Length: 231
Image 1 (tube, rainbow, N blue to C red):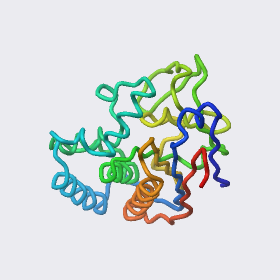
Image 2: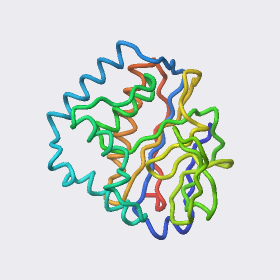
Image 3: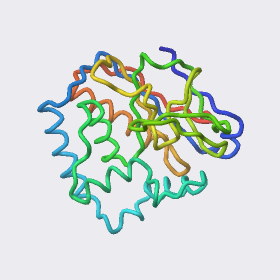
Image 4: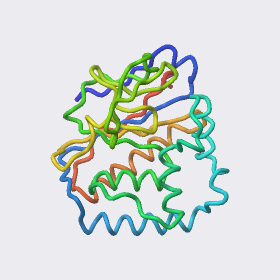
């Protein structure tokens, strides 16, 4: 699959520091649960609880960067939390993450570790090239676990392909391209924000692919960072 990310002029003008990292992993074997995901979950939970404190988490540089970004998108990050922070907070409160499947659980654990919002898409359902743009007024979208269409506004940032919106950037993924137990290849997206370095994004996606490989025996492919102003 040719992988390329385009940026609308409005997005690149408003957020010139933004970047996204894309990774591909093929030949995955998705299961409901296995020993590898339970072992990985235990290790990530223990590390997160040793490293972070729920009371001071809001002052973490990465958490702060996404919260500031959300305010610029007219989203209140104390009500709709950036996904990396939301998952990490759940773990720090002593709760477990929802169990979906080995692969989905693996990329959620990578988000806990890195605090970077991460999506996983069924590669066979995608129609590149990809584009980061603002939604059109009255454009519709169905997210995972949503039972009805949501109407978007032109203030909402989205990742889209040629046929559909894949994610309301960076906190709600499309139900149509989600990972299922029939998925054989996946595309991973690590979403940036102003103040998040390209190195952070690449490391987050590489961590994600490593976790997915551990639990699914997948074959790691390309990893590439895209930004509105290529360096």
